[in-house]
Image (cartoon, rainbow, N blue to C red; front, top):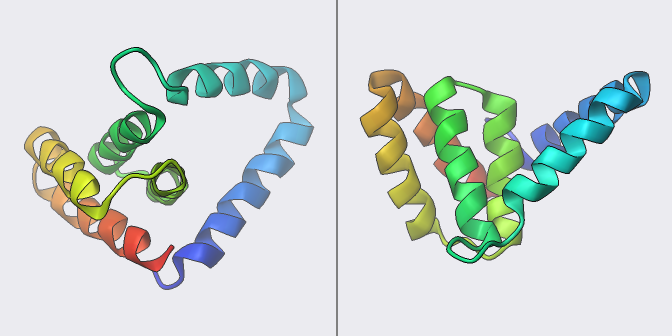
Length: 111
């Protein structure tokens, strides 16, 4: 990721464009996303965002990685917390997760 902040802006712009084109879909998706990343009784918002990062890494979704890394950081996640989530992602996703995990760490440091 050359510039994580630029990448994040691009991702957000793309999402906004798609959202305007499909408002009913995004109304539902926004509700799911809000519920999935809201603090719960066991996991706080940062931990939930770190879970999303781990899944994004294991799925190889670069835009998802930068989006959820930014969310995790905004909610107070630490670099060590990210590294621990990336360890789980690598366990579940193997070698490709190592590569995407490195991109997630790079984005965290850049944002």
